[in-house]
Every structure is written in structure tokens, then in C-alpha cells.
Amino acid sequence: MDADNRVDDRKVDEALEETFPASDAPANTVETGIRIAAAPATDIGDVSDNTARSRFELNVDGHIAYLEYERTPTTLTLVHTEVPAEIRGRHIGNRLVEAALAIGRSEGRRLVVVCPFARAYLQRHREAN
Image (cartoon, rainbow, N blue to C red; front, side):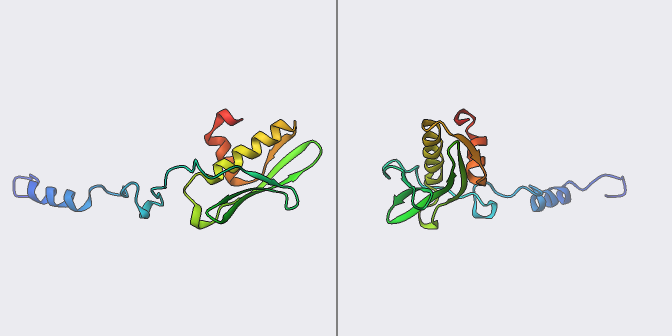
């Protein structure tokens, strides 16, 4: 401020340039944890039910992604989803959950979702409920 109690506009402008935006990280960058993913996998084949290992599997580019489950006569419990790092970002986990939901429903089983990924999928895709 000068003698007339006025703010020096040049100093304010310089301060704004240095601090603006105050705390907003740039969007869609590594710093924010958002990565630009490859297109959804459409040509990766069908999900298989490996009953011996109690999991639904999807073989993509030689890597096995899977969704572990526990089956009882009345329920299908989704326990854990695992997608190898080499094939992440292609919506493969979504495909596994979708297949598990379809199979559980076709068998007339009540679905119990313990897996955090599958639970998040259901929250994002309310129509799947």
C-alpha cells in the first residue's frame, strides 16, 4: 500500500500469478493418480469359470486376470479381483464382475459382494443391481 492506502496493483497481479490456482492440481496427470487408459478391451474373449480354483478367469495377452469367489448352494460371494499390471486400464476387472453377476443370477444364487472392486463397480453401475 502506498501513502493513500491504495494497493499497488502490480504487486497483487504478481502474487496472483505465483499462487493461482491456489491448491488445484492439474487434472488428468500422473500427480493426480488419473491415467489415460487404453480403449476398453472388446476382443479379449470370454470369461471362464475355473471351479477347481473357485474363480472366474480371463486370459488377456498371456496374463490371467481373475475374480475369486465362494459358492454355496444359495449364494455366490465375490471375494477378490486381481488384474495383472500389464493389462490394467482395459476394463478387464469390469468384465469379470459383469460375468460373475450374470452367472450368479443365471444360477439363481444370492450375490454377496465382499470384494472392494466389485462393490465399487456396483456403486458406479446401479443398473447392474
